[in-house]
Image 1 (cartoon, rainbow, N blue to C red):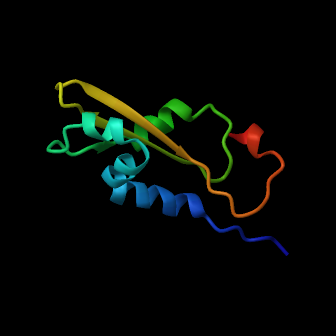
Image 2 (image 1 turned 90 degrees about the horizontal axis):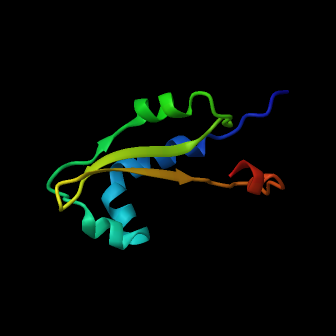
Length: 96
């Protein structure tokens, strides 16, 4: 019998898309205050896939890349990596 694994990473990616501003406000308040929130952030999923295509990755990778406009009118990219653990993994440190 094949073990079925839940894909928690996909849910985290969807949550990041929905709550990106709140996420930055809570975890990275100084970055949040530097962003011009009147300009909507742009998700760069396809660009991230092109950059990481050759990298070794597991089945689920909760990485998001966003392009934002800063208050000083400069453009910035924000890479977010979230590792969600539902079980103990002795190799977690190596995977991260």
